[in-house]
Length: 485
View 1 (cartoon, rainbow, N blue to C red):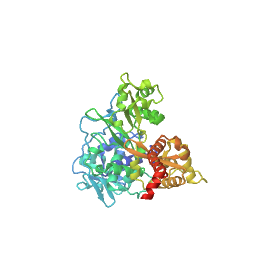
View 2 (cartoon, rainbow, N blue to C red):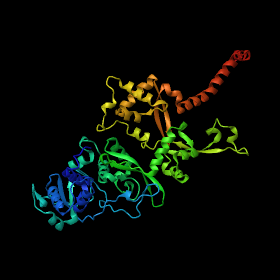
View 3 (spheres, rainbow, N blue to C red):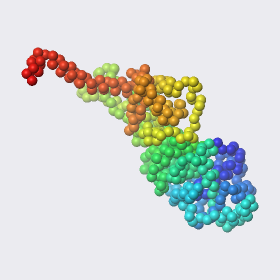
């Protein structure tokens, strides 16, 4: 989303009002939002407040309402001010976090949509504040008469543009619940909205929370929000995994020490044979203590890595057989760390399949990724071949070529029918991801080689039995028996 420069304070003022959604913003919160806004060029003091009031109170895209009851001022809660000192994980708040906008009530009234609990009970006082471009009430008079009952609300068009950006089609199809979720995420600005914890979306009793996964997928595919993994230490001391959402323009990459370690572990295992290695070797390569390594193998990280106990004779097949057993003849076992899925890949293939119609039109197409004069089927084969024995998923190829998923699938079907590529299902935790491998690298792929061996073993008894029956039929006794029958 491309907004005007930071020094355009008028755009910043309107942006802060619009981000509060249909609920609107009280003047006390408005001043706080301006103070917190990065690179806001004007200091917020008594003189500037009067100047800002003169601007917003007369602006055609701002309506002013009187709330039925004063809205209590609630400071913006910064979850990152309360983190675990050892691992940098956010610690859940010990006390309930007040939500001045609760309860969440969805509203659709002609072109007006959003969430607002006071939509039916508040009333518009814009005509008492201004008459055309003439201001009728000063800031001091407004605060004295209405106080925190006064709320500034941006027009539907301004609120939509603030959420989806200037480059997105304003007629984009967004359901009411998805819009309310988008509005909630937009209000969080750079802090983002999380799913877990006291302040999380799952703790809200809102309609969009019942189908949070579905609405989040829709908004992500349209390029309106970003998602990353988020870890919270709850009140019981356990670390739970959730998601962190931002509007695309407010995206901030949040990486705790645990996430950095996990990423490093995944990078190491990715280059190991069969994506696994002895825990002893891994700890030495990473240089972390046993306690920290145990944290990485705890429940929140099980969808990326798994700790197994494997007999030494299987893990070290070329070692001295004496090292496979104890003195009493029992098998020795090795603790092995197995990579299930790289932590950078935070989208399940099943999620992709569920929303596989095509990329939304507002997803940026990069023409520089497509070579002029070369057939697309040749280009996608080049990317698959470049991936080597590990191959590439349809998602990887879509990112490289920035083409709709249906186009990618059509090109892959051509290559599969021609026999230039093969497809293999790869286990990633509880999911299976289809990867495409150039035929010249087929025998070098571990999963494909294992599959061929299994097929050979399954076919062997059948072929043997057929051959045996054939041999028996040629014997004189068999011929005599057949003649009698």
